Image 1: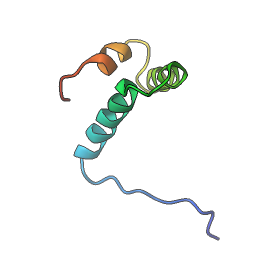
Image 2 (image 1 turned 30 degrees about the vertical axis):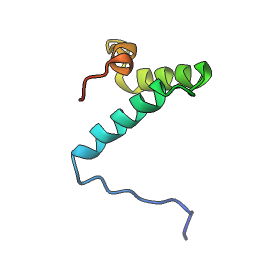
Image 3 (image 1 turned 90 degrees about the vertical axis):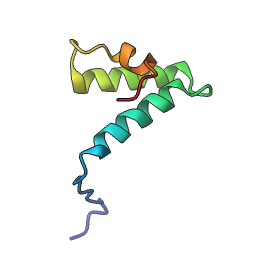
Length: 64
């Protein structure tokens, strides 16, 4: 039975890097509101843990 989900195969190691850069770009966009920025920080903190400087990563403009 088809549940409507889509399977995404990640074969390219470059893909996670692109996703992280996309998240950072959205976070730093001039029209991104504070609620959305907070949600991005919260979700990344859940993924990477408390020992990771999420805000430092998001505010950094150096490529990954």
